[in-house]
Image (cartoon, helix red, strand yellow):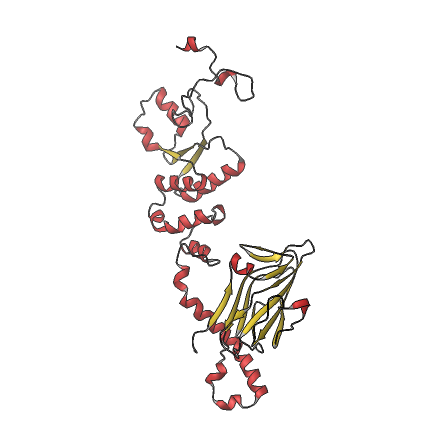
Length: 360
């Protein structure tokens, strides 16, 4: 219903920096009071509709006002204010009409008439933040689609226009959401909540474990990962994504080839398990064995392994131990000789003691 409207949008750091501020911090997330008192004032640049007598339609603010107060004064005028005159000393000296709101998120701009529009925003509260400002114009009301008899009385027409505006706002928001629905299907979408919604659709588990880039990877490769679910390749890819390290998986069937009924078989079962429904994960964490790192690995393995299988996680130590988990080129390498010294990094069992001539 009605023609497509126009709007001004502030949602980037450069957009907000075009305004004037006092005790306001401006960054990628928007504007917030910078003073320890939690009080700041922000004045937007002047918006030009290009048409005299413009009736401004709607103001939408996104942010967090729960722990403070945001007071907005919207001014409109047929002539552009001079630099430095905007809201000078708190008086709307250039405004021909203005409206005020407290903690607005979605409000109609009835009464704001003029080619030019600007705003003064008083922010109070250390955690108060505004991340997005959208100003829609020109004013379009559903009253225009009703018979003229509904517009004959000025007071009644004003009330009816405001009443219909409640449902009009819902309709416009839903229409805009439908028109831009395809953007929510894009993995690279920056729209708030779009990535999390896609992750839910693709049943990405343990979302709290993944950062934004990791989550985008999981969504982008969701079909392939789902097709490989339950396999060793799938588990190794998730462990690589979460830890950045290569995992090695040893299954019972792989060991059976080397079973000889003797010491070798006993050793392999001790290292990798004797249960056909059990597999072992060898993970070289580069010496990182903290509880937080191990918790991440456990959560990934628990979500990715087959339900009937049991897993053993072995974090490899960077040393060579006979008859234990030591793998040449993985967690044990032949490095360059370094003379023994008491510097806190060498220990006798792991250092070579001797001269260059003796080694030759």
